[in-house]
Image (cartoon, rainbow, N blue to C red; front, side):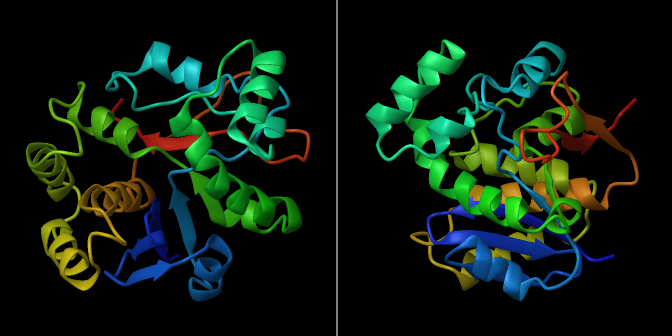
Length: 228
């Protein structure tokens, strides 16, 4: 089966396939129309509880990951709020936690994916949540040294990925030369490549917490590399 690594970016959504195909779409529905086959490993929360999502807290206690790389996911009602202020109020009342601006800025993309998975059960088997920074930390065996927003951080991550996919640096260079930075950040390319490597990996692990599904039956889980 064809595998895609998918990451959100300033231009919408970027995808890279197991055979080196690249795609950039302004919204998730358009991306799915282009990627008519294959499995998508995506860096976006899938499965939204009505209260706090416990998966992130479980992972923070178990895995080495850079501080701030794994943010708390807003509850479903907060994700669908009309304003940041309203989302903050809802999230605090239902989870006891305030909502960060980083979380709020991602709500639009969270809703795009959630909408498709709520409407189409088959997409729940095709679209799978993972996490690039967690994947990097597992593959390295320790917390990464540099931020992905720096040149050193990009090189650190490409070096790790090159041990898993021989064409990593060539695909990175192709994507960087094909799309302008205003549409596709260099860190977005690296994240999509990491998700591709997760999907292609022979050893993977399913990470779950006590919450297995949300109220709509959407699974709450992550697939990550397994180095055990």
